[in-house]
Amino acid sequence: MADQVILNKQILRRLTMFYKNARIFGSDFQFHTGAFEVVDGRFGAILPENVPADAIDLNGATVIPGLI
Image (cartoon, rainbow, N blue to C red):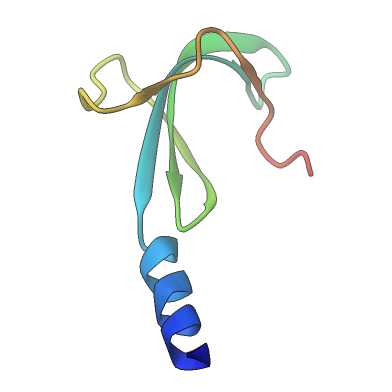
């Protein structure tokens, strides 16, 4: 049973999730509307306008990478 839980966590960590329509706080200390990816449970990168069709729409929610 514990082995299955560990296996499931390893599978989940390899997922890449895409989000769009977010207010993203950038390294220039400004908010930008756009899309981003989460890779292995961590903020990956801000993406260009072309995002996958299955990207999750955040409806303008604010995202601040690195804030815990």
